[in-house]
Structures are given as C-alpha cells and as structure tokens.
Image (cartoon, rainbow, N blue to C red; front, side):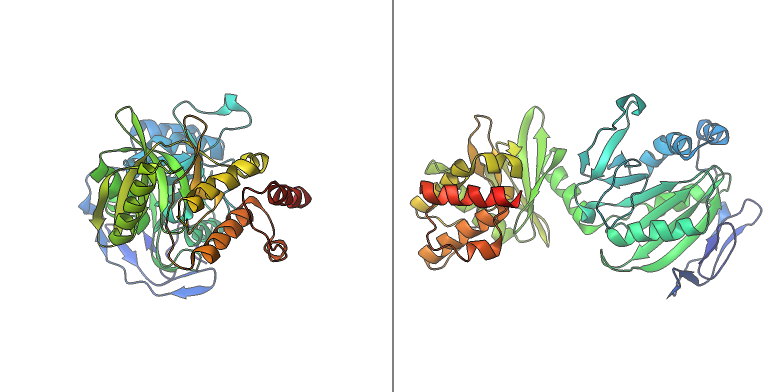
Length: 405
C-alpha cells in the first residue's frame, strides 16, 4: 500500500518545492498495477487550484463534515454538467461502502433524518445507477494510507474512472481502468498539496473523462433539448428517465440499438392509437452515437412500487390482459415497466412485443408479471390456470404474496 505524502511504487507526487511530478510503479491492496505515467511539470499551471475562501475554511475545519462543507463548491466545478451529490449519511448497497460525494447526471434524492442539518443548496442522495457514476470523492480530516483502499473499492463498484481523496492540506487522486464490479487496474495516482502549482490544469485534464453511459445520457439530453428530472426505471432493453423541456415533462428512453428503438416506437404508436394502456411516443427514434439511441414519450407518471402493486393485483393483471386481448404480447411484463398516469391509469412504458407462439408467450408474460409482484418461481410452476381476469387466479396471486410478506 502506498502511504500519503511519500513517493512509493506507482505514485505521482506534487510538491510546492519540486518542479516536477515524478512517477513510479504502484501497489494498492497488495495487487501489482504497472503504470505508464507521463512526467508533468509544475510550471504547466500558473495558479493554485483552491480559492482563498476555501483554503481559509479548510484551515478552520475541525471535523470531516466541516472539510466536506468547505470543499463542496470546489468539487462542483470539477464536473459542472453533473450533479454533485452528498451521500455522507446514506448507504448505496449492502456491498459498497459509501463515499462523501459522487458526480452523476442522475441520482435518487434522499433527506437527512435531521433536516435541520441539511445545508442549503446541497443535493443529498444515492446513485440511481452504479454504471452512471462519473467520479467519487472522499474527505478526511487527515488522510491515511488505508483511505486509498476505501476509495479504490468505490471505484471498483462503479464505472467511475477517477476518485479524489482530500483533507485540509492536500489530496490523493486515483485514475483507474476496468469493468464495473471487478478489481480495476490502477493507472495513475497523484499526491499533492492545495498550494501546489500545476494542480488546476491536472484536475481540468483528468476530470474530463466520464463512463460511456454517462456520456450517452449527456448526448441524449443535449440532442433532445431536455433537462434531467430523475431516473424512472431500467427495462429489458433500455433505461428510462424523467426529463423536461421548458414546462413540459416527458420520459426519455435510451437504448443501444436504433433498430430496437424504432421497433418499440412503432409498437407503442400502434398500441396507443388502438387506445391500449401504453404511453404515447413523441416523434421518431434518434441515434446519437453508434451504440446509443433514444426516443421521447409521455406522460411521465409515477413508478409502480411493489407496495402499490400488491394492493392492486386485479388492476395490474387486467392491464396486461388488455394487451393480450388486442393480440399483443408484451415481452417484458414487469411492474418496473409500468407507470401510474396523471388520471391514475396504469400504463406500460416498455413494450417489446415479443414474437412467437401467442398462447405460450401470453403465459410467459403473466408469469413474469407475477414474479415481479413477488410470487416465487417454484410456486408459479405449480399453477396450471393463468387467467388474469379470473377472480380465483387473482386471489391465488394475492394469497401467495401475503405468505411471502
């Protein structure tokens, strides 16, 4: 493990006394990561990275919370097109340690238990998607070697390529490469003090990178001339976000394949014109990059939670039955692909319209919907009559949901 403030294997150290940034090979968590590191000169920059007001606030800080409060405005400048989200008090998932801040184009809002402690203007929450985290930030009163392992784990859990550790006096910046959910390769690591020159340009260069999903989302928002409101859901072939254009709220669906997007727009349009319970597509599918397309639809609505669905099992099943009755098979019939519309109507937002034997595909739709409600798969295998409008079947589904609770 590399210690803070010293040049060890694979580190880059910035010092106000030195004129060069020197690099060697580094180890983190006892894993060898060979680094090809460019030698940078401090005279590349001509001003310190932190404003004097931030430096003064850091000097007075007596806790990690005060360090984070002092640094927040500066962290926002590193990725100005992203949300800077404070997550000091929230767990992401059971297997991922929480950092203090992350940068993302989309997040899930949270409130502190003691709302009096919330800072005005600060966004609080957790990532909507771990593959849409662009950078992670962790503040300390005094950096220690073990802190590098902590932020390295956070980088492994997300698609972020950069992690910034900081305290009152300086920082450690990690750059990694690799797949989310796996141990990544450490590319470079820099150590510096806030009064070092050359740091500003270093940060400007390093924080330009962002994961593919974040870059794609940014291009889709720009192309559609919309602003992010929030994450709605992730379906079998894409993800859906709530957006707005002026005062009009819409849903933005992003898919890899333009042909898939065009097929879905066509299927939705036909179903909508037939007055089936689906959202209305707004215009054609648009391709923004080779592996990224989108289309817009309305209304935005509210997510169907499992709690709502369990209280409304007959309505949920009947909404699927309306598609089947009109000769359509959904293909990904889960409550995650439904919304509650402005008139309290249930609508499908993800419509694959699977091809195949109709009766068999209908049963697969019903089974998938029941599993998303919470009926165990082995219990469904024991059922022989899948009639979504049959009261006995509806009661059977509710009965097994009650047993699961």
